[in-house]
Length: 270
Image (cartoon, rainbow, N blue to C red; front, side, top):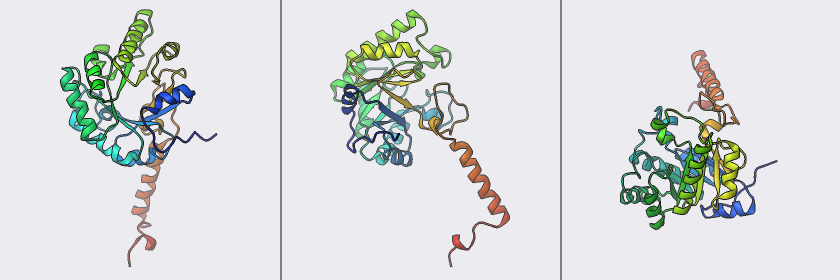
C-alpha cells in the first residue's frame, strides 16, 4: 500500500487535525537543502533540523557542541529546499536555559533569519522560556523521555521511564510542557506502554522515536532510516542500505577510472 500523500500546504497547525482524524503524523530530520527538497516530495508532515547534526554531520559524540550559528545556518538550508513543508529547528544546548528573554531572541533567529516554522526544546528545565516563546507567537515542539542534551547527567543514552518514579517524572514533564503551550510532544526512548498512556492522556499530539506504536506519529533520523549510519539502533528499522550502495558505486567508479573505462566517448566533449 502506498503511503498517504499529504496536501501541498502542510502546516504545524494541521498536526492536531491529523490526530483528531486518526491519521498518523510522519516526520524526519533534514540538514541540507538537497535532502529537504526530495523529502518534501514524500508524505512527511514536517521536517526537523535536529541538533543531531552534531552527531550525524559533524562527527561529535554528543549534540552538546552544536551552536546557534550552526543551527541557524542548517535551518536556512533546509527551509530553502523544503518547498511548503514546515520546518522545526532544534534549540541547541544552552540557547534557552539561561533566561526566557535569551530563549526568545534565539528562537527568533531561527524563525526570522532561517525561516523556521517552529522550534524544539528538551524537557522543562526552562518552562518559563517555553511560555515566553509561545507568547511571542513562536510554535514550540516539546521533547521528553531521553533528552540528548542531558547526556552528561544521564551518563549515556539510556531508555527512560522504566521505573514507576521515572515514568511519573516523564508524565509530569509532559503535562508541564503541554500547559506551557507546546503544539506537540516528542517522546524518545520510553517504554511503549508508557508512551501509549501519555498519548491517551495528553491533548497535544505525541511523536515517538523509540517509543512504540502507541504515539500519534513517528520521527526518525533520515540517515538511520536510509542505512547511512554505521551502527543501527534498536528502535530504527533501516528501509534502505545507502551506505553499501554508495560504497559499491564508488568502488565501480574507481575501477572504471583505473581501467581507463571512464570517461569514455559518451562522457567527453568533442
